[in-house]
Amino acid sequence: MKWIKKLFSPRFTPDPRRWLLVDVETSGLDPSSDRLLAIAGVVLSISEDFKHMSIEITDSFEVVLRQTTPSDKDNILLHGIGVQAQREGQDPATALQDFIDWAGTSPLLAFHAAFDEAMIQRACRQYVGRSLPNAWLDIEPLAAHVHRTDKGESLDVWMKRMGIQCARRHQAIADVWASAEVLLKLWPALSKEAGDFAELKQMENGVRWLRRRPATR
Picture 1: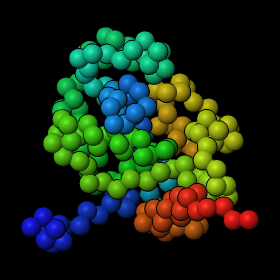
Picture 2: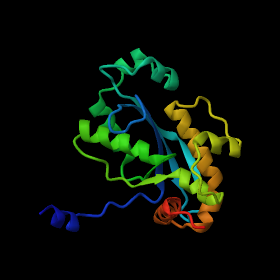
Picture 3: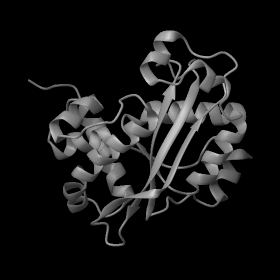
Picture 4: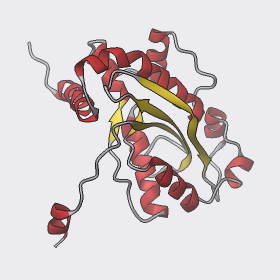
């Protein structure tokens, strides 16, 4: 039975030192029907004592997936991946397998991660035949926790609040670097309250629970 196999299968343990911050570009905002156009990511190195985080500038990932039918003009104007670039992109199955190999056992982080996760997982199931087992972590609730707000904000709001510039918004690799800078500014406060990935995940879940809780008079 499947549940017995799952019960006795080895547990997938996130890499405690090598984390990946990722971002996607897509043909639209509906994760159930729109297409994955590009993935970008950088490696975050976590110190053994969990007090320090750094960006590994020599270890990054960026790929455009080949599209039979390129996205529409307005979409192209948003992310800048033109018709020719989409048609000449990498074979989706190869691109996604390369991403899976690069990811390894590292946890995956993103700003508003649910969208990135949904797009990547659906594409992996479609082209590779399986989902990624990697753990995911959303940066946005962590920012809300540090700044004691229960209001969800965009990456642009947090960048402005922290004085962070982005080379070109809505370009995957540029958004990754901007998100990484946000996280680096949050890290001193986060590392005082959490000692590993699991505790950060609990922090994220706590913010989500508070947002769902009915307001009291």
